[in-house]
Image 1 (cartoon, rainbow, N blue to C red):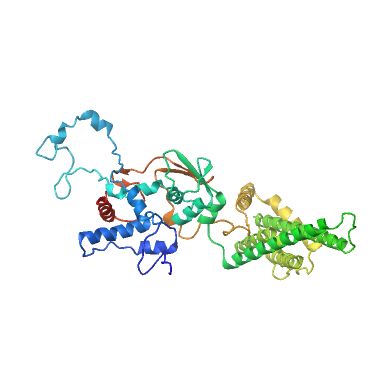
Image 2: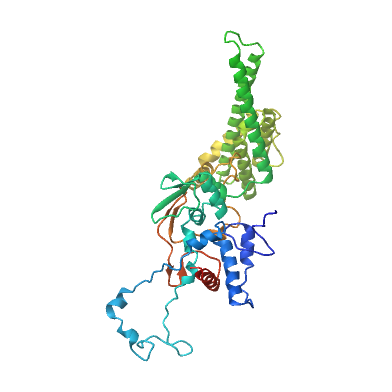
Length: 441
């Protein structure tokens, strides 16, 4: 049997998800007047609201969770309570004592008291569930993903691992999610090529570990008195040489990055233009990515990479009439490197204090949000697309996104003009859904 489409466009349903398809369905939602019986209107409202509020909960279980007793609060005006004792409500001609309030355009005096949307609290019991609270705290991109995090042991409640998504939180409970899971859930996805490269890298690492374990077992099975064969010595020498070459390549790349930053700091008359600065910034980003992939790239690729980067830096710093030739070996040309370093040191000394602070801030951001191809999300980290439409936190949660933890302060309540249960549906739909479940209590 084919599974139903979760985000359908022909028969759209609003889901508890940050998907772009869900955002499109939300934008296309219309409150149309349906010519139907009262029973049909209640059923349509129930179908729409249940697709959003706890669609992962079985209907029978939700019917047991539903309660007709809705929590609400009414703010009291202490000044009003000190001046009056309530008898003014019965004064006048049936509508209370006349006050000095100015009438409206129709000449009618009315009290500007907001109505309490009780029916908006129909699905308040769902907000107590652990998976729903994880989604409301912006730790997951959907309620289903939050449920998966809980089932896989990535969520703790009051410091203890909780693997039950239906756990009902109590006021004061603290729950926290693993930061890597939060970064994956709320971060932008990787490109297709990056995903393939990451998978290939993991396969290479797994194969290397398997071969290393196999060779270790074979070595231990042999006699300890047997001396190493002469063929093993060149392998060790070759590994040491390759490690040394990688270190040299990394040092060269770091020197190129320092040179690029120094050129950017030059604010003098002979400093780079705005277009050149853009090119140098792009070059610095390329160098940072190359530094991160030194240990995973072959030495031949590193040679070509360093040569290409040196040519880019030379073209970005010297006039077009005299471009510097790109070296063909894996090491940087000493004369060219000396010229670049000398120019960079002079530029750094001439840079004002404000530019130095700006450069230090940029370097701090690079260190805090580095490029790491081993992560399952795009790096440097950035929010997932279309997340701004769903980026809000309810009043009954206190969230600290720096440590990926939140506190369930209290149960949601209804206030004058607002219901604390987030819902994309109108008050009419909530009222019809409430009446649908009310007949079963």
